[in-house]
Image (tube, rainbow, N blue to C red; front, side):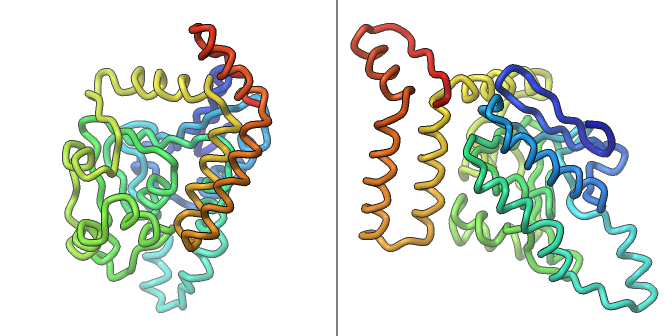
Length: 263
């Protein structure tokens, strides 16, 4: 896939690289459209068992490209940003959450605005030592979007999320690790190697168990306790019928490494 992003297959791993490094991978119409197509493609590809989203150059993504909006603001046009979110960003976030395979955000350098929304919608976030996270919508007179106000408090807690949103101050990689915004931080020099090793491991795992786990985690945010427990039972029934579960039992009892096939 050419254009504003690159889609690479590495065995069972798919890597989506946002590729507008000259503008810190900010999102214009072309990039959001290309990202939507790439996410749909890897979601539908049974050979893909894990996905990484990362950025080219010095950052993951600095958010929405404001250059087009500037001209509209100067002209006094009605921007209708709510409709823009519904059309461009909400389908992206929903597709990441619905994808039945792990999605990892490999955050290199700056991530802000809608870029942060994409990152916090992913299942896992890992970071380079130079990563910087900014929930800076209020700095331009806006509110958090791209799902950020839904996901961010659930990841770092209400108080920390509110502070990030109200102040717009950057959170560095070490602080992001401390508050649980990311799960691993690696030096810039080894970052590309480390996130790929991590994601390749996920791509060799029990893919259907990951999918069912993700279904349960998504449901746990919104369901009451009793209905969640019933869903949990149903998910475990389904997991227990997979080939990977049979392989896991065989490997455990024979004390040999499991060879999961993702089904």
